[in-house]
Image (cartoon, rainbow, N blue to C red; front, top):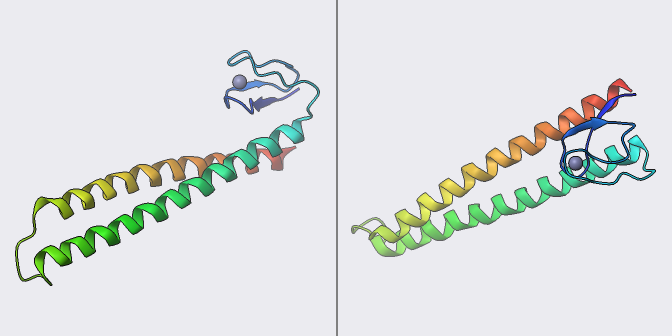
Length: 118
Ligand SMILES: [Zn+2]
């Protein structure tokens, strides 16, 4: 018997338990390997979505810069607050995305390390 992570809520449960005590996820007769594969796929999709979101934020930076450029007419005049606000929002969103990306990647790494021991 070993401890695995619930594919639904990621809490630790016994590999023998057919039902997660934390979220009620029914494992049925799914094997441990299938569960790991499920979790791995889920994490990969999550990472993919986060990467797409970070590209979205990067294009937001470009828009903010273009707006700034237009307002200042090539750095000659002062800009309104608009471009700065957009830039600040983009930076905050980017940091949050990076944080989630870091968490998802280390979860995936832990999953890979655990698989190695079996
Ligand atoms: Zn669960």
